[in-house]
Length: 194
Length: 269
Image 1 (cartoon, rainbow over the protein chains, first blue to last red):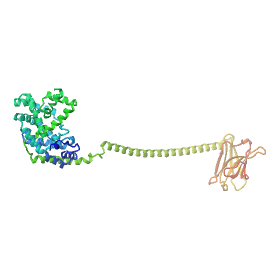
Image 2 (cartoon, rainbow over the protein chains, first blue to last red; image 1 turned 180 degrees about the vertical axis):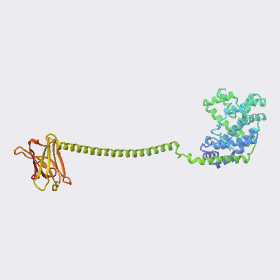
Image 3 (spheres, rainbow over the protein chains, first blue to last red; image 1 turned 90 degrees about the horizontal axis):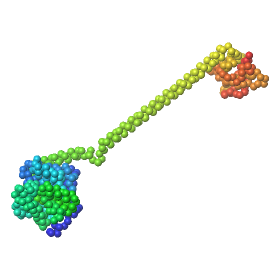
Image 4 (tube, rainbow over the protein chains, first blue to last red; image 1 turned 30 degrees about the vertical axis):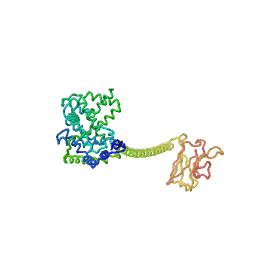
C-alpha cells in the first residue's frame, strides 16, 4: 500500500477525464454528458456550499460546464482534471458571491478564465479513489480544532483574506495565518499517509 | 530565515487565496523571478486546496439543469456540424474565390479582347486591301486617262504626221498611225483579225539609212472586236530618220528582228 502510494504516475497515463475532454474538441455530446455525470455532484455541492442558494448555484454550475464545452481546447490534458474543474467552479462561485463588491474586484484580479493548478499531481493523488479521498479529507479537517477548521472554511468557501478571517473570528492575524498553513500541511500529511 | 523560506511559508495561503494584497504581490513577484521550488510547491498546494471541496455537504443538482445543459450543447453541436463543411481545412477562403473569379473574368475578357482585335485587324486588312485595289484602279484609270489624253493630243495636234499603213493582203483592213515629233507615235486599227496561235503583232521602224536594220517597237494585240490602240512615247528612232512603219506577226513576246514579212507597211513622209 505504502509503495503503491509512492509509485510515480506515468507521464503517458491519460486519465478518462482527459480523454473525454479531448472528445469535446470534436463536439462529442456523449462525452460531455459523461463528464457531467461523473462530476456534476461534487461541483454542485461545492458551489452550493459557497452560495447557499440552489437556483443561483445551478446557474453557476451551468456556466462552469458550458465553459468546459465551449473552451475545452484551453484544458491541458497533462494536468489532473478534477482539481482543475473544482478550482474553476470555486472561482466562479466566489465571483458570484462577491458580485458588485470591492472583494469582487480583487477576486477578478486574481482569477483566471481557466485556473492554473498542479501541472503534475502529487504522488499520493491516486492512492485513494475520489469517494475515499473525500472521506479522508473530511476526517482530517474534521479532526482540527473547530476554530482552525472554521478559519480554513472561511478562506476556502467564503474567499476571505487573513485579515478578514482574523476580524471575523476575533483572533490575532498571526494565529490565523498559522492555522491555515498548518491545517493544509496536516491535510497533506494525512493524504500522504493514506 | 532567508527570503526564499519566507515566501515558501506563504505558498499554501497564496494557493487558497487568503493572502492580503501586499503579501500576495510579494509572492507573485517571487514566483515571477523563476523560483522553481516555489512554483512546484504552489502546484501541489493548489491541488491540495482543491481537495477542500470535499468538505462541502453532498448535494445533487436537479434533472432540469442537466436537461438545459444538454439542450444547449446539442444545439451548439448541431450548429457546429452545419457549419462544418465550410469550416474544414479544405474550405477555400473568400479571397481565393475572388482571385479565381477575377482571373476567370480576366481570361474571358482577354479572349474576347483578342477576338475583337483579330476582327479589327482583319477588317483593317480588308479595308487596306480594298483601298490598295481602289488606288491601283485609280492609278490605272489615271494612266489610261493620261494615255488617252496623250493620244488625243497626238491625234489632234497639227504638228503630228498621219501615216497610213496599207495591208499586203487586200482582205485585211487598213491601219493608221499619227507621229508627233515630240509627243510620240500612235497606231490604231479596226476589224483586225487575231494573230495565229502563240503569235502577236509587232511594230517596226524602217530607217532611211541604207542598209539600216528595222528597229523593233511595241507589240500589239487586237481585242475581240479586232480593235487596238497603241502609243509609243519615245520611239526608238526619230521621225526624220525613219522611212516607213511596218507591222509583222511575231512570236509571243516580240522579236529583236522581223521573222516574217510585213503584213502592213506605211511610208513616213
